[in-house]
Image (tube, rainbow, N blue to C red; front, side, top):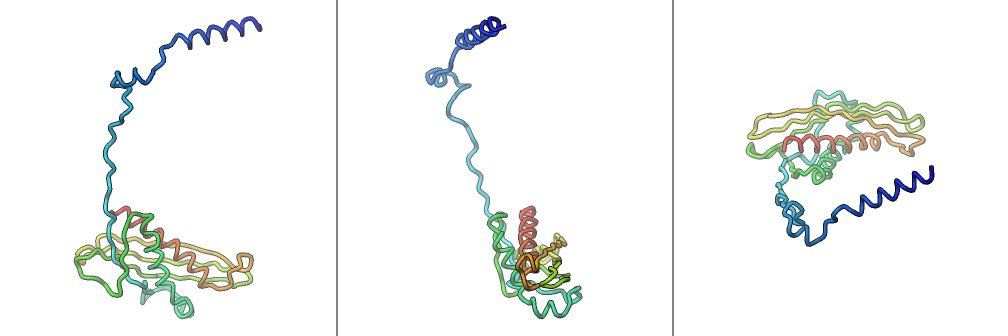
Length: 185
């Protein structure tokens, strides 16, 4: 058995050494093995530009408890900032404005339509935030999407305020909206 294994190894080594090796001179002469690759030049595209409000409003008909509107009033600003923060990752450019821009600009209208909070700091929070997003081009609504995110936190998580947990959901929504806008680009 050992003799057969040794004979097979010798045959394999002899077969491998008989193959012609490719050298640098062979590569230069043979166009199939050219070292220069004909790759297309790098394509660069300008990121799409969208205008959003500095602070996303709560819907007037929103399903939001009055105490959440009062205590978590920064959620709209946090959502707007989150969309802007994730913009480079999604290859888009976000311009935050104080008021709705002219009809010529690409405008992304966002509205917090549902904010739900349950639990407390001792048993934990279960929070939900939903946003309605509309893309307006030349003053006309072209696309619309509804996104919802949940977040939790509380005693074991070290979070002692409901608004902090809601900010997590809103932050993730900002990334979701950026990804959606990138698909339109």
